[in-house]
Length: 244
Image (cartoon, rainbow, N blue to C red; front, side, top):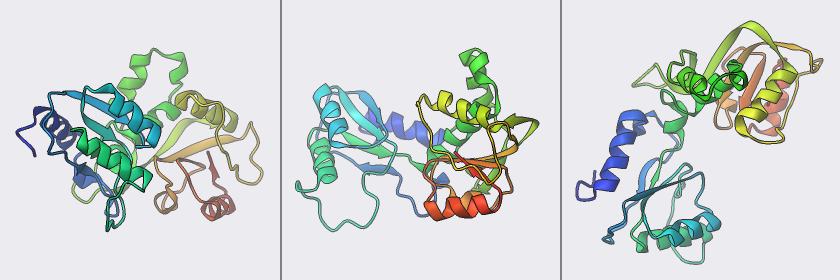
């Protein structure tokens, strides 16, 4: 940990406590991915999902940012060179030159207590839209759902969650709740054969990522995932499992 930089130290300390790097998938690349040697008086923290060129322009234009927390890793596979010809690498190099550190949590935030999987499960398993905002936050913080693919060092968390509802939820209700929770007008759906808007869903599995290798391990009526592949969707449908 870079103790000479209080902003970076504070960010790393928070993640070490709430979403430590050992929670990440073995294939993932998380943590402090790019550290700037350039001194800076900036103390701001910037949050983003991806370091796209547009995001980089916004970040660099601010002038008050010391640490950018970017959800997806800005460096993932093997890299043999960093050049200005590559758009993402150019953004990374510009951030370093501007005195901005890049921290990428990715699957640590999916797996941790109160993280993205718990938030998805709480938002999809409760009628949160009829409750006060604090009720959803409390549900996330006190989530006790079954963990799929538990972490080796902390089995109480993992890459997926599973729930059996006490009262079945209609397919149409789940789709509408997914859109409302994510604040999007549309979601991609792949209902299993015979499923209609009125069909009752008794069990739910969630994974913030693609989820194909994780959710195929659990018996549920419906998956909610980020980006499950075409053939994985067909395989799930063949088992009678829908997906949103």
